[in-house]
Image (tube, rainbow, N blue to C red):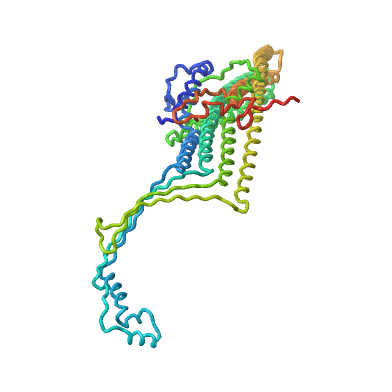
Length: 528
């Protein structure tokens, strides 16, 4: 497994330990792993197995991992600007000896003959004067000089940045970019855990709703058969049979809808887990789940939960990293006002024009120091500084709004938890009462003291109570998963993952508690 998956294994171990009490019956008998096979070769998942599979296969999490790798590449790229660069270069040229001889001969004979007129057309008077003054003795020329047909030039130079005002702030900014990608990875992981839990419980509740609908259909079928028997015996009118048939056929669409919702919820969970479509399974479900809908009440202090969320949420730490990165971008832009000094050094080897032998080359060293400083740029750098300052202000405002967003998410999840707790408590007793009311209505009808409408109404009331109770259980567990995500308690991190955790997490750089501002400094307490 790749080195980045160590975070998944650690987080999953913590999650699995916390889910032992919640996973419901039947989970302990299933083997560990990404899934086991049922008699129909359909993968079967408990809740912790579904989470482990999502951590390994979910594409959103894999993309977040690649983003960390990309930011590491940015660090290497920007850091290279401050390190030496060595560049070898060379040229090689070959000219056919015949072509070189013709060119050389035509150019060297221009001093003794009038053949130069073919190259430069001079006035006749000037040409005649030159011929009259020409010496009868031939002048020596270089027609016997042989030029080498091979020429080459080799150069090796190294450059080193000595000083500027932009590179070092840019390098520091890239480290904050890496930190931002790391915290985005953690935020994606927490969101994935909450999503898998919610979708898993959605499958469970839809499965239970099918059972409720099937039980209701079975009772209505029994009621219809009983009324038909009574009608044939002449004790009830035909109206009772029709009424029972209408009630049954009105219930069947609800069962069909529940079955379809169950199928869709399993498909949705399979997509989140990263399971591919298998053509051989046909219309069979992509997976099966093992587990029940747990209910483990939890005592929660809202104020403590909000403070815990501010301290632990990677969402806020990512926003802090973005602010610190933008601070360095402002410094890098200001650094353009400072001088830039570079050094260049190396050696050069040039071949002889008459001999291509390596022993006859000309060689030497090159050394150069260059510097520049902007004196007047008509406000170009100043305009860039204003832009970066505005972006920094935007990042700080975004951070403050993200803090309020965390507070809102925690309070919303807390309110939903309270609602669902009250809903569960109210419906637990209501299911018992509705079941007893249905039993009494059937007994009265059998004794001839009641009417069929009472039985049908009691059946509807029981179905409503059972459905509401199941929805309350699902709402509680999904709200609890969202509450754990919003407070940062979804998973535990040690901040020491190899090649993954930012170095700055070992300090107070990412302390996002209530007493710090967007840049990590302690807030000033007003006396007002």
